[in-house]
Image (cartoon, rainbow, N blue to C red; front, side, top):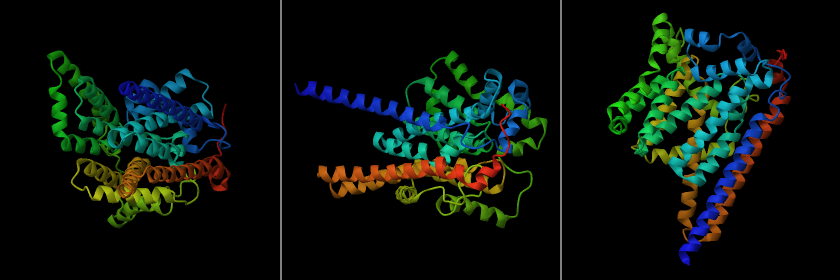
Length: 401
Protein backbone atom coordinates (compact mmCIF):
# COMPACT_ATOMS: atom_id res chain seq x y z
CA UNK A 1 0.00 0.00 0.00
CA UNK A 2 2.75 2.43 0.97
CA UNK A 3 4.72 1.47 -2.13
CA UNK A 4 1.69 2.13 -4.37
CA UNK A 5 1.20 5.57 -2.80
CA UNK A 6 4.87 6.36 -3.32
CA UNK A 7 4.66 5.35 -6.98
CA UNK A 8 1.50 7.42 -7.46
CA UNK A 9 3.18 10.44 -5.89
CA UNK A 10 6.21 9.95 -8.13
CA UNK A 11 3.95 9.83 -11.22
CA UNK A 12 2.20 13.02 -10.11
CA UNK A 13 5.56 14.77 -9.73
CA UNK A 14 6.64 13.59 -13.19
CA UNK A 15 3.38 14.84 -14.72
CA UNK A 16 3.86 18.22 -13.05
CA UNK A 17 7.45 18.37 -14.25
CA UNK A 18 6.51 17.52 -17.84
CA UNK A 19 3.60 19.99 -17.76
CA UNK A 20 5.87 22.70 -16.42
CA UNK A 21 8.47 22.06 -19.12
CA UNK A 22 5.80 22.20 -21.85
CA UNK A 23 4.34 25.45 -20.51
CA UNK A 24 7.82 26.94 -20.12
CA UNK A 25 8.78 25.97 -23.67
CA UNK A 26 5.58 27.44 -25.08
CA UNK A 27 6.15 30.69 -23.16
CA UNK A 28 9.76 30.85 -24.38
CA UNK A 29 8.78 30.31 -28.03
CA UNK A 30 6.16 33.03 -27.67
CA UNK A 31 8.71 35.46 -26.21
CA UNK A 32 11.21 34.70 -28.97
CA UNK A 33 8.71 35.15 -31.81
CA UNK A 34 6.44 37.93 -30.47
CA UNK A 35 6.70 40.97 -32.76
CA UNK A 36 9.92 39.57 -34.21
CA UNK A 37 9.63 41.54 -37.44
CA UNK A 38 7.87 44.60 -36.08
CA UNK A 39 9.50 45.45 -32.75
CA UNK A 40 11.63 48.03 -34.56
CA UNK A 41 10.79 50.07 -37.70
CA UNK A 42 13.50 48.47 -39.82
CA UNK A 43 16.86 46.73 -39.89
CA UNK A 44 20.28 47.78 -38.70
CA UNK A 45 23.04 48.19 -41.28
CA UNK A 46 24.65 45.03 -39.92
CA UNK A 47 21.44 43.03 -40.36
CA UNK A 48 20.97 44.33 -43.87
CA UNK A 49 24.51 43.19 -44.79
CA UNK A 50 23.39 39.56 -44.51
CA UNK A 51 21.47 39.99 -47.76
CA UNK A 52 24.80 40.60 -49.54
CA UNK A 53 26.84 37.92 -47.74
CA UNK A 54 28.26 34.93 -49.60
CA UNK A 55 26.35 32.14 -47.91
CA UNK A 56 25.69 28.59 -49.07
CA UNK A 57 28.42 26.01 -49.64
CA UNK A 58 30.47 28.36 -51.82
CA UNK A 59 30.59 31.09 -49.18
CA UNK A 60 31.21 28.69 -46.29
CA UNK A 61 33.99 26.94 -48.23
CA UNK A 62 35.89 30.20 -48.63
CA UNK A 63 35.19 31.47 -45.11
CA UNK A 64 34.01 28.77 -42.69
CA UNK A 65 34.14 30.91 -39.54
CA UNK A 66 30.82 31.18 -37.73
CA UNK A 67 29.87 27.92 -39.42
CA UNK A 68 26.85 26.98 -37.23
CA UNK A 69 24.92 30.20 -37.84
CA UNK A 70 26.01 30.55 -41.46
CA UNK A 71 24.58 27.11 -42.19
CA UNK A 72 21.26 28.22 -40.70
CA UNK A 73 21.28 31.47 -42.68
CA UNK A 74 22.16 29.57 -45.85
CA UNK A 75 19.13 27.32 -45.33
CA UNK A 76 17.04 30.39 -44.49
CA UNK A 77 17.83 32.11 -47.79
CA UNK A 78 17.56 28.91 -49.83
CA UNK A 79 14.30 27.48 -48.54
CA UNK A 80 12.38 30.45 -47.07
CA UNK A 81 13.00 33.17 -49.68
CA UNK A 82 11.92 35.92 -49.94
CA UNK A 83 13.48 36.66 -46.55
CA UNK A 84 11.86 39.56 -44.74
CA UNK A 85 12.76 40.96 -41.32
CA UNK A 86 11.21 38.15 -39.27
CA UNK A 87 12.70 35.35 -41.38
CA UNK A 88 16.09 37.06 -41.44
CA UNK A 89 16.13 36.91 -37.64
CA UNK A 90 14.75 33.36 -37.43
CA UNK A 91 18.17 31.56 -37.35
CA UNK A 92 19.13 33.69 -34.33
CA UNK A 93 15.82 32.80 -32.66
CA UNK A 94 16.40 29.08 -33.25
CA UNK A 95 19.93 29.39 -31.85
CA UNK A 96 18.57 31.22 -28.81
CA UNK A 97 15.98 28.50 -28.17
CA UNK A 98 18.61 25.75 -28.39
CA UNK A 99 20.88 27.74 -26.09
CA UNK A 100 18.21 28.06 -23.41
CA UNK A 101 17.47 24.32 -23.63
CA UNK A 102 21.19 23.52 -23.29
CA UNK A 103 21.47 25.96 -20.38
CA UNK A 104 18.67 24.13 -18.56
CA UNK A 105 20.40 20.77 -19.09
CA UNK A 106 23.66 22.26 -17.78
CA UNK A 107 22.07 23.58 -14.60
CA UNK A 108 20.13 20.34 -14.15
CA UNK A 109 23.39 18.37 -14.21
CA UNK A 110 25.16 20.73 -11.84
CA UNK A 111 22.48 21.91 -9.40
CA UNK A 112 19.29 19.86 -9.75
CA UNK A 113 15.78 20.65 -10.93
CA UNK A 114 14.70 23.53 -8.68
CA UNK A 115 17.83 25.65 -9.19
CA UNK A 116 17.83 24.75 -12.90
CA UNK A 117 14.27 26.03 -13.19
CA UNK A 118 15.01 29.34 -11.44
CA UNK A 119 18.29 29.86 -13.29
CA UNK A 120 16.88 29.03 -16.71
CA UNK A 121 13.88 31.33 -16.26
CA UNK A 122 16.22 34.19 -15.39
CA UNK A 123 18.57 33.45 -18.28
CA UNK A 124 15.83 32.93 -20.87
CA UNK A 125 14.00 36.14 -19.99
CA UNK A 126 17.08 38.28 -19.43
CA UNK A 127 17.08 41.35 -21.63
CA UNK A 128 20.48 40.37 -23.06
CA UNK A 129 19.28 36.91 -24.15
CA UNK A 130 16.19 38.43 -25.75
CA UNK A 131 18.20 41.12 -27.51
CA UNK A 132 20.84 38.87 -29.08
CA UNK A 133 18.38 36.06 -29.89
CA UNK A 134 16.00 38.32 -31.83
CA UNK A 135 18.39 40.19 -34.11
CA UNK A 136 20.41 39.00 -37.10
CA UNK A 137 24.02 39.02 -35.91
CA UNK A 138 26.65 36.69 -34.47
CA UNK A 139 26.19 37.70 -30.82
CA UNK A 140 23.83 34.80 -30.22
CA UNK A 141 26.45 32.38 -31.57
CA UNK A 142 28.80 33.28 -28.71
CA UNK A 143 25.91 32.90 -26.27
CA UNK A 144 25.32 29.39 -27.61
CA UNK A 145 29.01 28.49 -27.90
CA UNK A 146 29.87 29.01 -24.23
CA UNK A 147 26.70 27.22 -23.03
CA UNK A 148 27.32 24.16 -25.20
CA UNK A 149 30.97 24.21 -24.19
CA UNK A 150 30.05 24.14 -20.49
CA UNK A 151 27.40 21.49 -21.12
CA UNK A 152 29.94 19.23 -22.85
CA UNK A 153 32.23 19.69 -19.84
CA UNK A 154 29.45 18.74 -17.44
CA UNK A 155 28.68 15.64 -19.51
CA UNK A 156 32.36 14.63 -19.54
CA UNK A 157 32.49 14.91 -15.77
CA UNK A 158 29.62 12.43 -15.46
CA UNK A 159 31.60 9.73 -17.30
CA UNK A 160 28.60 8.20 -19.04
CA UNK A 161 28.86 4.59 -20.14
CA UNK A 162 27.37 5.18 -23.60
CA UNK A 163 29.99 5.63 -26.33
CA UNK A 164 27.56 7.76 -28.35
CA UNK A 165 27.76 10.55 -25.78
CA UNK A 166 31.45 11.02 -26.60
CA UNK A 167 30.71 11.11 -30.33
CA UNK A 168 28.31 13.99 -29.66
CA UNK A 169 30.95 15.82 -27.62
CA UNK A 170 33.43 15.50 -30.49
CA UNK A 171 30.85 16.83 -32.93
CA UNK A 172 30.00 19.72 -30.61
CA UNK A 173 33.65 20.67 -30.11
CA UNK A 174 34.20 20.44 -33.87
CA UNK A 175 31.42 22.93 -34.52
CA UNK A 176 32.64 25.20 -31.72
CA UNK A 177 36.09 25.32 -33.32
CA UNK A 178 34.55 27.48 -36.04
CA UNK A 179 33.47 30.13 -33.53
CA UNK A 180 36.33 32.67 -33.24
CA UNK A 181 38.20 32.39 -29.95
CA UNK A 182 36.61 29.14 -28.74
CA UNK A 183 39.75 27.14 -29.53
CA UNK A 184 41.37 28.52 -26.35
CA UNK A 185 38.60 27.13 -24.15
CA UNK A 186 38.46 23.79 -25.96
CA UNK A 187 42.23 23.32 -25.65
CA UNK A 188 42.05 24.16 -21.94
CA UNK A 189 39.18 21.74 -21.44
CA UNK A 190 40.97 18.87 -23.18
CA UNK A 191 44.01 19.43 -20.97
CA UNK A 192 42.07 20.00 -17.76
CA UNK A 193 39.79 16.99 -18.29
CA UNK A 194 42.30 14.72 -19.98
CA UNK A 195 41.36 11.89 -17.61
CA UNK A 196 37.71 12.14 -18.65
CA UNK A 197 38.73 12.39 -22.32
CA UNK A 198 40.81 9.22 -21.98
CA UNK A 199 37.84 7.52 -20.30
CA UNK A 200 35.71 8.41 -23.32
CA UNK A 201 38.33 6.98 -25.68
CA UNK A 202 38.40 3.71 -23.71
CA UNK A 203 34.61 3.40 -24.15
CA UNK A 204 35.14 2.91 -27.90
CA UNK A 205 35.16 -0.87 -27.69
CA UNK A 206 35.80 -2.07 -31.25
CA UNK A 207 37.93 -1.08 -34.23
CA UNK A 208 34.96 0.23 -36.25
CA UNK A 209 33.68 2.23 -33.29
CA UNK A 210 37.14 3.71 -32.75
CA UNK A 211 37.26 4.76 -36.41
CA UNK A 212 33.87 6.46 -36.16
CA UNK A 213 34.96 8.18 -32.95
CA UNK A 214 38.14 9.43 -34.64
CA UNK A 215 36.16 10.68 -37.63
CA UNK A 216 33.84 12.70 -35.39
CA UNK A 217 36.94 14.41 -34.01
CA UNK A 218 38.86 15.14 -37.24
CA UNK A 219 36.14 15.63 -39.85
CA UNK A 220 36.08 19.35 -39.01
CA UNK A 221 39.79 19.98 -39.46
CA UNK A 222 40.36 20.06 -43.28
CA UNK A 223 38.00 22.95 -44.01
CA UNK A 224 39.40 24.98 -41.12
CA UNK A 225 43.01 24.15 -42.04
CA UNK A 226 42.42 25.28 -45.63
CA UNK A 227 41.03 28.60 -44.39
CA UNK A 228 44.00 29.22 -42.08
CA UNK A 229 46.68 28.28 -44.61
CA UNK A 230 44.97 30.26 -47.37
CA UNK A 231 46.13 33.50 -45.72
CA UNK A 232 48.23 33.69 -42.53
CA UNK A 233 46.16 36.63 -41.22
CA UNK A 234 43.12 34.35 -41.12
CA UNK A 235 44.53 32.70 -38.02
CA UNK A 236 43.95 35.95 -36.11
CA UNK A 237 40.29 35.94 -37.09
CA UNK A 238 40.00 32.28 -36.02
CA UNK A 239 41.60 33.03 -32.67
CA UNK A 240 39.23 35.97 -32.16
CA UNK A 241 42.12 38.43 -32.15
CA UNK A 242 42.30 41.85 -33.83
CA UNK A 243 44.74 42.55 -36.67
CA UNK A 244 46.37 45.28 -34.54
CA UNK A 245 46.68 45.24 -30.75
CA UNK A 246 45.96 48.31 -28.65
CA UNK A 247 48.36 49.41 -25.94
CA UNK A 248 48.37 47.47 -22.69
CA UNK A 249 46.59 50.17 -20.67
CA UNK A 250 43.69 50.21 -23.13
CA UNK A 251 43.41 46.42 -22.96
CA UNK A 252 43.40 46.46 -19.14
CA UNK A 253 40.73 49.16 -19.18
CA UNK A 254 38.55 47.18 -21.59
CA UNK A 255 39.04 44.02 -19.51
CA UNK A 256 37.58 45.65 -16.42
CA UNK A 257 34.95 47.38 -18.57
CA UNK A 258 33.42 43.94 -19.25
CA UNK A 259 32.52 43.55 -15.57
CA UNK A 260 31.64 47.24 -15.27
CA UNK A 261 29.05 46.77 -18.04
CA UNK A 262 27.61 43.69 -16.36
CA UNK A 263 27.30 45.04 -12.83
CA UNK A 264 27.28 48.86 -12.96
CA UNK A 265 26.71 50.61 -16.29
CA UNK A 266 25.82 48.88 -19.53
CA UNK A 267 27.59 49.13 -22.89
CA UNK A 268 26.66 51.76 -25.45
CA UNK A 269 25.12 49.37 -27.98
CA UNK A 270 21.85 51.02 -29.08
CA UNK A 271 21.13 48.14 -31.47
CA UNK A 272 21.43 45.61 -28.61
CA UNK A 273 20.86 47.40 -25.35
CA UNK A 274 18.78 50.05 -23.61
CA UNK A 275 20.83 53.17 -22.86
CA UNK A 276 23.52 52.57 -20.25
CA UNK A 277 21.57 50.43 -17.79
CA UNK A 278 23.60 47.60 -16.24
CA UNK A 279 23.14 44.19 -17.85
CA UNK A 280 22.11 42.66 -14.52
CA UNK A 281 19.26 43.88 -12.34
CA UNK A 282 19.63 44.16 -8.59
CA UNK A 283 18.53 40.57 -7.91
CA UNK A 284 20.97 39.30 -10.53
CA UNK A 285 23.82 41.31 -9.00
CA UNK A 286 23.15 40.02 -5.46
CA UNK A 287 22.85 36.37 -6.51
CA UNK A 288 25.87 36.59 -8.86
CA UNK A 289 28.00 37.90 -5.98
CA UNK A 290 26.67 35.09 -3.78
CA UNK A 291 27.59 32.60 -6.50
CA UNK A 292 31.10 34.04 -6.78
CA UNK A 293 31.50 33.77 -3.01
CA UNK A 294 30.29 30.16 -3.08
CA UNK A 295 32.84 29.16 -5.73
CA UNK A 296 35.63 31.04 -3.97
CA UNK A 297 34.96 28.84 -0.94
CA UNK A 298 35.44 25.84 -3.28
CA UNK A 299 38.44 27.25 -5.11
CA UNK A 300 40.04 23.85 -5.77
CA UNK A 301 37.00 22.36 -7.49
CA UNK A 302 37.24 21.55 -11.20
CA UNK A 303 34.04 23.45 -11.88
CA UNK A 304 35.43 26.56 -10.19
CA UNK A 305 38.52 26.45 -12.40
CA UNK A 306 36.38 25.98 -15.51
CA UNK A 307 34.05 28.89 -14.74
CA UNK A 308 36.72 31.38 -13.68
CA UNK A 309 39.14 30.44 -16.46
CA UNK A 310 36.36 30.74 -19.06
CA UNK A 311 35.29 34.07 -17.58
CA UNK A 312 38.82 35.50 -17.59
CA UNK A 313 39.70 34.25 -21.09
CA UNK A 314 36.36 35.47 -22.42
CA UNK A 315 36.81 38.92 -20.88
CA UNK A 316 40.38 39.10 -22.19
CA UNK A 317 39.32 38.21 -25.75
CA UNK A 318 36.62 40.90 -25.58
CA UNK A 319 39.13 43.42 -24.22
CA UNK A 320 41.56 42.75 -27.07
CA UNK A 321 38.98 44.16 -29.47
CA UNK A 322 38.59 41.28 -31.92
CA UNK A 323 35.32 39.76 -33.07
CA UNK A 324 34.51 38.12 -29.72
CA UNK A 325 31.23 39.36 -28.28
CA UNK A 326 30.21 40.22 -24.74
CA UNK A 327 27.76 37.33 -25.11
CA UNK A 328 30.64 34.94 -24.45
CA UNK A 329 30.66 35.76 -20.72
CA UNK A 330 26.96 36.43 -20.04
CA UNK A 331 25.94 32.74 -19.62
CA UNK A 332 28.82 32.23 -17.19
CA UNK A 333 27.43 35.05 -15.07
CA UNK A 334 23.99 33.38 -15.11
CA UNK A 335 25.56 30.10 -14.00
CA UNK A 336 26.99 32.06 -11.05
CA UNK A 337 23.52 33.53 -10.45
CA UNK A 338 22.05 30.01 -10.31
CA UNK A 339 24.81 28.97 -7.91
CA UNK A 340 24.05 32.04 -5.80
CA UNK A 341 20.36 31.14 -5.59
CA UNK A 342 21.24 27.58 -4.55
CA UNK A 343 23.72 28.87 -1.97
CA UNK A 344 21.30 31.40 -0.45
CA UNK A 345 18.57 28.77 -0.23
CA UNK A 346 20.93 26.26 1.38
CA UNK A 347 21.91 28.85 3.99
CA UNK A 348 18.25 29.64 4.68
CA UNK A 349 17.33 25.96 5.02
CA UNK A 350 20.32 25.32 7.29
CA UNK A 351 18.82 27.80 9.74
CA UNK A 352 15.35 26.20 9.55
CA UNK A 353 16.12 22.57 8.64
CA UNK A 354 12.87 21.07 9.95
CA UNK A 355 10.43 23.96 9.61
CA UNK A 356 8.13 23.48 6.58
CA UNK A 357 6.71 27.00 6.97
CA UNK A 358 10.19 28.56 6.83
CA UNK A 359 11.04 26.34 3.83
CA UNK A 360 7.91 27.47 2.00
CA UNK A 361 8.61 31.10 2.89
CA UNK A 362 12.15 30.84 1.50
CA UNK A 363 11.03 29.41 -1.82
CA UNK A 364 8.20 31.94 -2.01
CA UNK A 365 10.59 34.87 -1.53
CA UNK A 366 12.96 33.51 -4.20
CA UNK A 367 10.04 32.95 -6.56
CA UNK A 368 8.81 36.52 -6.06
CA UNK A 369 12.30 37.90 -6.66
CA UNK A 370 12.63 35.81 -9.84
CA UNK A 371 9.20 37.01 -11.01
CA UNK A 372 10.18 40.65 -10.38
CA UNK A 373 13.40 40.16 -12.35
CA UNK A 374 11.50 38.57 -15.23
CA UNK A 375 9.02 41.45 -15.38
CA UNK A 376 11.81 44.03 -15.26
CA UNK A 377 13.82 42.43 -18.08
CA UNK A 378 10.86 41.67 -20.33
CA UNK A 379 9.56 45.24 -19.96
CA UNK A 380 13.05 46.59 -20.60
CA UNK A 381 13.21 44.74 -23.91
CA UNK A 382 9.63 44.86 -25.19
CA UNK A 383 8.52 48.25 -23.82
CA UNK A 384 11.43 50.57 -23.01
CA UNK A 385 13.94 49.62 -25.74
CA UNK A 386 11.58 50.00 -28.76
CA UNK A 387 10.65 53.48 -27.51
CA UNK A 388 14.22 54.65 -26.98
CA UNK A 389 14.93 57.22 -29.68
CA UNK A 390 18.65 56.36 -29.93
CA UNK A 391 17.90 52.68 -30.44
CA UNK A 392 15.14 53.37 -32.95
CA UNK A 393 17.49 55.58 -34.98
CA UNK A 394 19.89 52.71 -35.79
CA UNK A 395 17.08 50.58 -37.26
CA UNK A 396 16.80 52.83 -40.30
CA UNK A 397 17.13 50.30 -43.14
CA UNK A 398 13.67 49.46 -44.43
CA UNK A 399 12.61 45.87 -44.98
CA UNK A 400 12.93 45.18 -48.70
CA UNK A 401 10.06 42.69 -48.50
